Image (tube, rainbow, N blue to C red):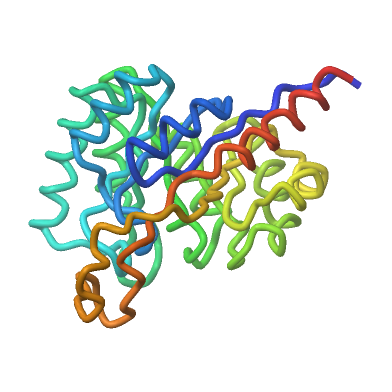
Length: 256
């Protein structure tokens, strides 16, 4: 059986994350801000630095707020402006998802963002909003019709390791019309099983580790976040060693 190349995409929340993913040998990244809330639109500064420092393919998230995917007219206007600016400043694709209140895909808004990407010669990616639609087959048909490049999905489960059967069905149903990208909960330990069970040729991974920054330690009564009160002397960055090990593992498999 002919070997296929497995592409590793890394979910990044900063320019620093992109640089670590690049050093680890990743094929592509998805650039966000605020990964705590599932990923929001990144700053132009983070995109510019990431592109300048790595030159690697960067898919830029277009998501104006946390909490669902049915946006106001003003929020969607922000999406359109962000999309235009991200593409103009080096993004290689847009990542987005628009739903109606009943969870079905908003055809018109999806068409507009997909055309925006396509007219710039870039990719259009529909994110894990697919995982809450009532009928994923209908959604795949619509997204393929609209010219979306790729769908990121956990197989409509909280963790893709529970949704591998659905992902395999999605890949078969898509039949080459649109790419299916499994993501959510992929680790070095379960990567091989997920590849085998889904038959996928690409993976979306997010593996971070904590680093220290003691600059806020002079007054331990102060918190800058919300009610969860995360530690102010820690921050998250892509775990280069873990991602690099995953890249090496798939490359070794390709060479056999």
